[in-house]
Amino acid sequence: MNLTADIGNTRAKLAVFDGDTIVAEINTDHELTDLPTLAKAHPCRQGIVSTTAGLTETARERLQALGIPLLFMTGETAVPVQVHYRTRRTLGSDRLAAVVGAHHLHPENDMLVIDAGTCVTYDLIDHDGNYWGGNISPGMEMRLRALHQQTARLPQVGSEGDTPDVGYDTETAIRSGVVRGMEMEIEGYIRHFRKKYPALSVFLTGGDAQKFDMSAESCIFAPDSIVLRGLNQILAYNE
Image (cartoon, rainbow, N blue to C red; front, side, top):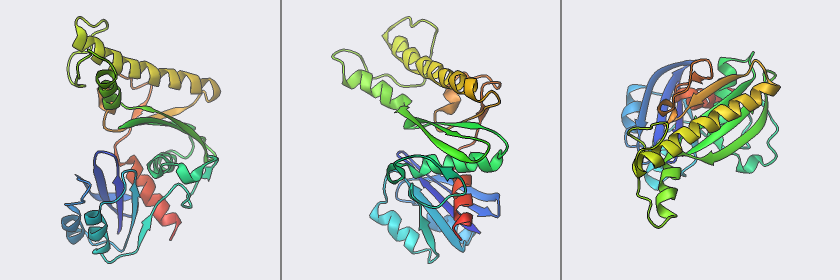
């Protein structure tokens, strides 16, 4: 079995694969506190680690204690798609793993993979397995925080709550401006790329994906495991 670890900016996701099947999946902290318990219940023969936040010393020690070969993924790791991104050294490994995972699930489709997390990333891969790159914009909490921190009077507003078409007070004006603005941004990207790829499939994933009022016709709500599935494919490709 294979261990996959996706350590993001706010949390870490771990999964154990038997072939292409997930047999266990957990969320944990950046210290990988729950890793020993997962590994004891599901012994693995190898693993792969992707991190955007870096590894703490405790997390590194817990990974090393597994005593199995580990592949620490970067943007330059060999992958089963053609990468046309010009600066692979600075390419986030989670972005690359997400498009590999999406392409593995639907290899016949042109796909736009949208990950709404700490940042919102838009990545394009065609049906021939050409990954053309993508764009990055601020995530929901980043936008809400910036409105408070970079103005004199606007309050800090959370993402949970009413989002009317027209804000009826300062709180709903900020929240609706951010949430509905992001919905329109996402819909704009989808319309733009469907002009070039009429049969484009859209994967929407990430911690904030469910907060958007997107129609099923617009996109597929992909599980957070899309990155983990991509990591599993990359590990197999590098054996």
